[in-house]
Image (cartoon, rainbow, N blue to C red; front, side, top):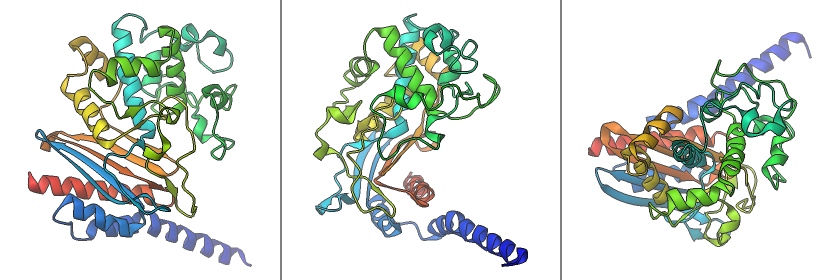
Length: 342
């Protein structure tokens, strides 16, 4: 094969990838938007999704929607109140807990990783200058363990330190506070820092100080805390089996909840009912008020839309391929429906 032919094949391959990841989701956005959210998510099933759950809280009115399968193999239809692996949306809860603990003077935003976890000095570059604030804001430069080629997706770590070992002794991605780069390692370490400061699990603190006061009785820190039959099944494009039993236990990605519970939490995070004024100010300085989540078989979006006063949560139990870009397209269409109604 000549060099010219090789180059032509490479160009063709690039064009195909651009078509798959850009043009196809764009086609979705060009399709007529349905009259209702329910009909919109039912139409979205034709794009390769197994099941969809949506929760909306707008102007004080709330509604739950579901379409597709909770469990494809057993033909169990989607339940809007099913538990779902919310993945990195968990970081909102950890950041909220950190704001409360910082306000109690049990932690300081300006103390360093070396101050809180001295055993990592020399194992994580710049640990003497990386502050808790930088970790909360993803400005630490600590490498993301999930990006490591040896991260064991098929046999997940049984404790957070196993995941941390993948990035110990690696060079920093950048000097502390010089850039922003999302890293799950930050919140793994924050989970450990919170545990040390509290003298007990931050999961227990989140339940007592955040979940119980808001009556979020369908939110859990770990898969091991729930009846697995209550959890929506998870599917990966090209893989036939249900993967909901995969147990991801690392802080910042381990939680499960109903869409309704996530919506109630997000509204409380925003409207001040979760915090006192000082806690709210701390939270606003360290983290954002929305998040997405992605694990094998699970993708989620939790956002507040101020212009229409709407908290909108979307769960889809299919991941892989170009499903993320398609899920974002579906979410945007739901917002269009709400804007039109508003």
